[in-house]
Amino acid sequence: GTLSVRGKLLTGIVSSAKAPKMVVVSREYPRPTPKFKRFQRSRSKVHAYLPPCVDVKEGDEVRIAECRPLSKTVSFVVIEVNNKDGSGN
Image 1: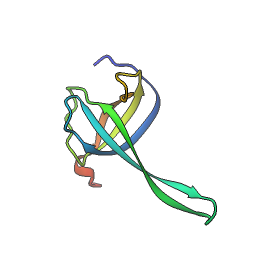
Image 2: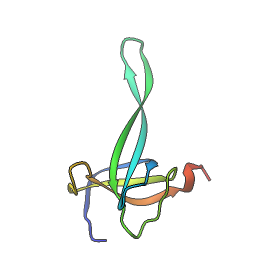
Image 3: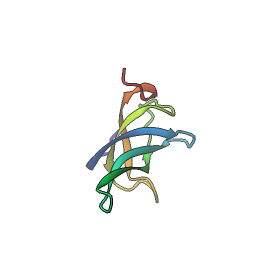
């Protein structure tokens, strides 16, 4: 496609691919808890546009890039699939 990207590059696991041309990517990251001087795992969901040239399904690890707002919740686009099914192979 000809969708220009700018800004953040993120990686995550596809948690939902039910909507046409759109996926939900779950990201897990450590968030500091100052009181206990430890980190806790937090999750965030990012909605991303799925171009027709990229084929993904739930569980795949993907790389997404920020683009112009495409809808109310979609401001990212899938640019590549890192690992099928999220396995490290």
